[in-house]
Image: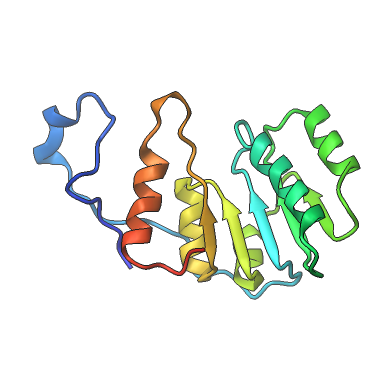
Length: 163
């Protein structure tokens, strides 16, 4: 499935107009479909590299505490989350919530999950699409960033199975 930018997509690369005739959009480039998961979680919350995902991970931890259903959660903070934040999140996680910095089998975990909650980074969205996982995307928008919002809105317009 190729996802093409909508005509209204705003390109933030300032020299885009200078090279428009040299650019051909080929769609998303993703890894092969993931292997079957060796471990399963109902909900996977991921923060990409983790540099800007602290609030997302903390909100997910609180949601996991508040939801009165027997769901297993994996919070994947990313390697760039400060150690003190990782330690605080881990220390306050309930028993049904596992906290990880990184999972090399991330795409495989998505294939076995009921829901992925993440920002809308390129690699994460590719992994979600390949895994066929339901997703709740929370695009990163600080500093005027629009890339993730455009990606999430395009998926929504295609009726991808997102929550």
